Amino acid sequence: MAAFTGAALCFGSQAESQNVSPFKHGDRVAFVGNSITDGGHYHSYVWLYYMTHFPNMRLTMYNIGIGGDAAKQLARRFDDDVLARKPTVITLTWGMNDTGYFEWYRGDAEQTAKARLDTSYKYYYQMEAKMKALPNVKNILIASSPYDETTTATPNNLYKGKSAALLKVAEFQQAAAAKNKWGFIDLNRPMTAINKREQANNPAYSLTPNDRVHPDNDGHMVMAYLILKAQGLANNAVADVEVDAASKKVLKALNSNVTKVSGSVNNLSFNYLAKSLPYPLDTVSRGWGNHKRQWDAMKVIPFMKEFNTEMLTVKNLSAGNYQLKIDDEVIGKWTAAELAAGINLAEQTYTPQYQQAIQVMDLNEERWEIERRLRNHAFIEYNVLYDVGLHNTDSRAAMDTVNKRAVKEVFVNGNKPNYLLSRYKSVRDTWQMEMDVLLGQIYKINKPITRKISLTRIN
Image 1 (cartoon, rainbow, N blue to C red):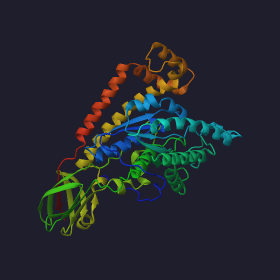
Image 2: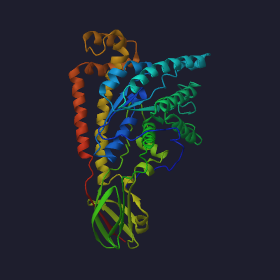
Image 3: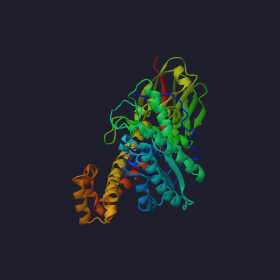
Image 4: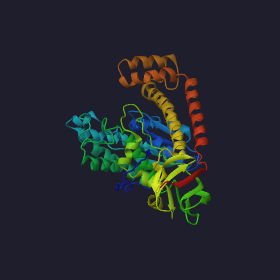
């Protein structure tokens, strides 16, 4: 019997977040940012929650990140890469690249950082003006995940002072959101609090262990958790069912329907239809350079308790041990006392409904992989071709420019194999069609179905 056990840990994670409502049916959500967005999973994990918890709420979410971008680069592509998608919600995060890296080794690091941020604030205001001109678009500023100066996970990329500068950006973003009456979500301070708490026992712990900058999969799950919590979605059960075995009455059926209760205090069965699926947690490390799993985040956040409870409670069974089956699949064994106290079915990874949710997760991962190819293409378009007037030309001159830059620039060379394909519009269109097919299938198979639950006394 495989099961997830989540950490019941509390921290003031949402003290700094403000005015963030949940997404609604039909929303087109643009997640705008740098490499943390571009190569990261947090937006995909958020979408997976909506796919499974709100199966009839059709949404579209866009990864609009590009590696290396600061506010200047975000502003440059804001019209073509963001507004052209006609979003109904824009989440904007920046700051990691804006606060610099090797500059922190210089004697004038503080002055250099201030000058860099003054430049970034100027370009932020350009984006702000465009966002304010769209009254029907909901805007959310997100303070970046932190730069971890304190971990011993790696001796590299240690820039003393950068984390404090990044916190200043978070404070600026919070003030800007308040001024405009926009939503604000703070990832910086809550994730820093988790790092420091865990490092008290394990100095090598970090949500960004590989380079101090980029969250691993568990870090991205923490980010998704903080976003969902800021939206007020905590404590919305997948389902909460309570049945009295003696009277065969349904005492509770939250976010679910329970029918056809039959049997006795020794053998009980009923039909169960939840209105949501449990949230599936990936046990595979995904993404280039990552080593952690999404599931690893359960050790440091109370996600299972707050977002993933599918409770089954059965009162007044005869004392003894019971075998639980769902659709004739053996799930496990519990005592009458344990069933009377309630068990969380979302912790049982072999239930039919959890297996259904895994299929949604796997298709969403396929979609994420394809979207990453399109973001790699965007990197070339905006970081290589834009300034030489070859943006969106798909021309031989564009390919020649990429070939020339790839000789000396490692990131261009790394994206070149993808561009050899993506430079053809027909290929990009096909990738988009593949994602559309995947989404169509996701929203077809994510609908909960009626399950038969049976409890049989075995001794």
